[in-house]
Length: 373
Image 1 (cartoon, rainbow, N blue to C red):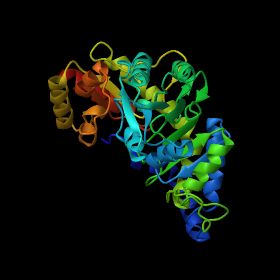
Image 2 (image 1 turned 180 degrees about the vertical axis):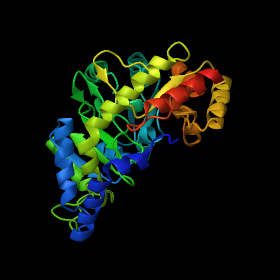
Image 3 (image 1 turned 30 degrees about the vertical axis):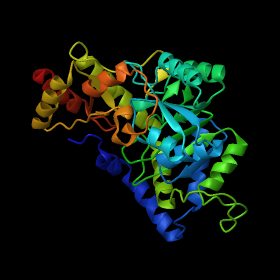
Image 4 (image 1 turned 135 degrees about the vertical axis):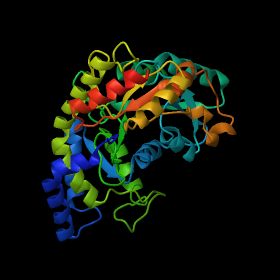
């Protein structure tokens, strides 16, 4: 059994993916070929924004946004304490200071009360200037952007939507990657929309920022790639990955429908045995992960061992908070209480989830899980 069955997805889409790759090889435009621009138009239309620019990976996408805003030393950027390292790593790389914020115990996304408290304490301390809120769409569920935007407007902050796991999620029908002043996603193979290598994209309605990010992604180019007007990156999505993503994007809505059915089945079978994921009213998830909560770390460890014995893979996202990462331990960062984060690091467990998961597989997983508990 696969945690995320990319092999089965390939077999399902094989004819179209093979043809797409053959077309790229025949045309021999491997870098910034026509499929890249076509994909960017398709992605912008799908999300519902004016501009989409692809890049080499989701981490670079976040970096491009921060560079477009001129974020640097002396700036405070508010980041969930429960997320993947890249969400804060990019802040430190720009010389700014990540300020870690607790998350909601149920949705796993940024907690707005903790966010506002951290902003107020940062202002009171007087050493950093609050600039950006990084709101992460964790496990496929968009953050609570109506509340996040109210805080951002109150303190005149920018919102960077980290939609690496959230592509395909919705709030009242509006698509993820359209909620931030700039939004980003990742096309890492295991993401909801994944390619066959690394890839990422930025989304915005702002013409000036889009122009800046287009320059930054190709060595800070000006009128052409040999006219360099700023220090930039080498961060382009190659044509082969773009062609593969074009095929996968056409199948994407159908896959999101299937993962939502799989999640419903999981929840029906596991309710009352473990704490199952909660999707708030009006929100839709693309289910990058199906993550349950257990009473404590000992229960999780024994359950994970039992599942492995039964041939069922599982993963812990994430066993260590951002503020406990070794890279940040000696940085004298402002630390606020992260009660939910500290607990979740010891209690969460993600189960196999993908569009090609059979009902019989879910029933087998749940029966073994319940028996082990």
